[in-house]
Image (cartoon, rainbow, N blue to C red; front, top):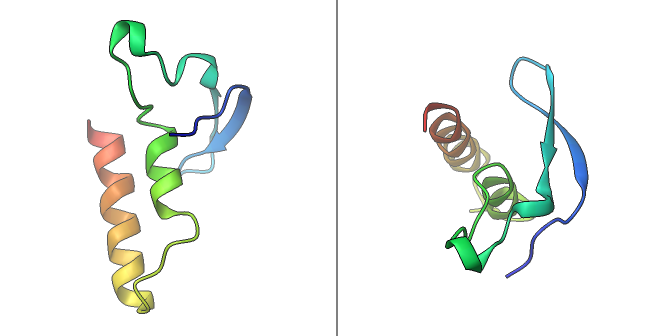
Length: 69
């Protein structure tokens, strides 16, 4: 498992920069095993189904889920 251990600026769909502190992304002591801001980006980066339409559908679904939950 990998995680980012630094501050990073991330843009949302509205292009408003959001500052995310990734210092505590992974913390097994409090059973926080993933970061809802980081993990979707890790899943999406470098992955393809071979179809742009399917890739865009999956990316949109993941980002929409992150915004609502």
